Image (cartoon, rainbow, N blue to C red):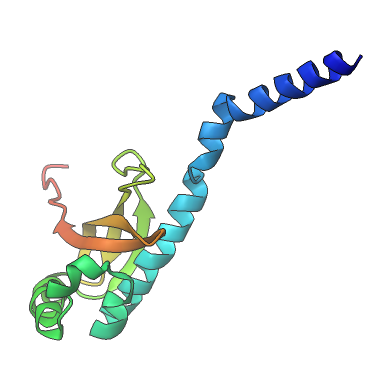
Length: 148
C-alpha cells in the first residue's frame, strides 16, 4: 500500500510537470495579450490626437529613447502623419496580419482618421523587465482601388 501511494504521487507529479498543458499555460493567452497591448496602443493614439509628446512616448521601450524626443514627435507624427491623415477616429484589429508571439508581438489595425478613411497601423512591441513596451508605431495609407 505504501508503494502504491508513492507510485501514484510520482505519476501525478510527472503528469503535472511534463504535460503539454503546462507549456501552454506558461505563455500569456492570446486574448489577454491582445487586450493588454491594445491598451498601450489606445493610450498612444489618444496622445497623438492631443499632440502630447510625453504621453505618446510614455509606453515606449527605453531602447527607443533616441527617437522619443519632442522634435522627432513633431516632425514625424504631427507634421507627417497628422498633416496627411488628421485625427485618429477608430481602429479594428487585423488578426491575420498580427503576430501574437509572446516575445515579439505585433498588432496590425485598419484605422479611420479624420482626413483618410483607411490607414494601416502597425505596432511592434518588446519586453522590458517583464512588461511589454512599444517599439514602433507606423501609419500607412491604404490605397483604395478607384475601379471598384
